[in-house]
Length: 221
Length: 221
DNA sequence: GATAAAGTGTAACAATTGTTACACTTTAAG
DNA sequence: CTTAAAGTGTAACAATTGTTACACTTTATC
Image (cartoon, rainbow over all chains, first blue to last red; front, top):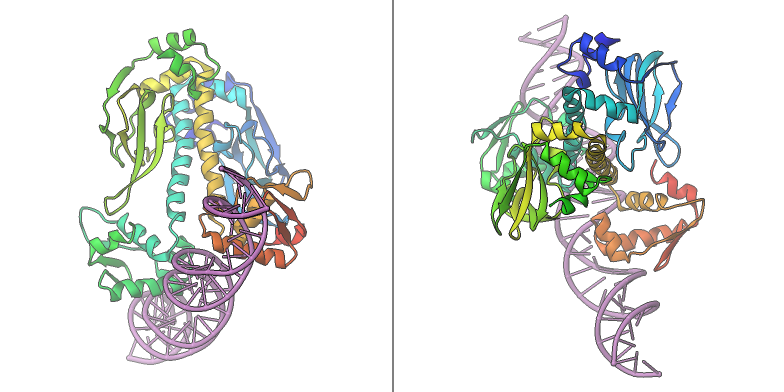
């Protein structure tokens, strides 16, 4: 168990022995789950920290018609929904079920809070985890706020410019970039063609050359 | 100062005297700022916690052309960018400047981490603050993921259904709802009219009646 | 009750993207 | 080198939303 936990971001920087000592001071359970068992339903309160010790869980979004859409696999030593353990709306965002047999380390929220005070590294690690989630979501929102493919493409390219080097390596084909943007591949190709026609950029298979940086930037005004 | 901090969510549940004791144990500065002073630029590392004691700050998004768009006012006793203090990409998401003269409580990150270990209430409060941010952002992403106005409206209405009561009070006019969705008011009205024509709902000034719940739900398949 | 303001409904047209299809080009495999 | 597979470019048409304008309805004010 402590070897697995040693690989968890929550205990980054700690040795197995140190993790052992910490966990021993903290009320916890090791809970087994069996394949297809439902561990939590969307909308339920998250009142305990859960770290996967073995096996696999899956998170499924339930739409308003009752259909399930699998959105994420969770393996050891991942922590389940860390950003929902605290906060006024700390409800499971998805249905959580088991894809296989396995084990969970379970620590109730108040006990987990105490665990965080026992070692500043664990505290900082947990703060890093949930802050990282928030920052990822923040960046995603920036991207989703762009309404046109042209804006998405401009943002994508401008974010990859380095040291005023106008040649941007791209190791995705057009289909993959389109999927990244959530748009249709031919539609993306159309916009690329438009920007090429306007002399703003030159798109090749593994690289893009920005020809008119000002024009590209002003797409995002 | 401690009266102001007593109103900060970070110190919720603590008396002024307790806050006084905690802060005294923690290296900190009280920094003054003057109107129009730039306190931080977008992209700079967030290495200290900053809590406004007096005055007002504003966060401005800088687009790629260098234009500033004011997005947020911050007053006492708010904390500046709490979700960016930890995490690998903990960079200021905006330019931060002063709208007036005022004062900030400044605590460097490592010292702030230690402060969090001194009182489990403060720790839980901070975890609540940044977890709440993540949860808010997560909900926003759900909404932004809807591509059509019909989907946005279905989600908006289904989220307001309570106790199988098909009458939903709406205390926004169409213009306000359209702004909430980030769409054009006539376009929203068009979709409302479409759904009314289909017998799915009846839209009145202060309320909406859901006439065909199944149809509304299946918009979100 | 009359008038003004605010809110709503709708039409015409423009802009953007999605979908489907297929031709062409490039890359990979044998 | 040849063939097959993958990637790209483009067209035609459909779907959705935005913009502008204005008529109509409802609400607020005097």
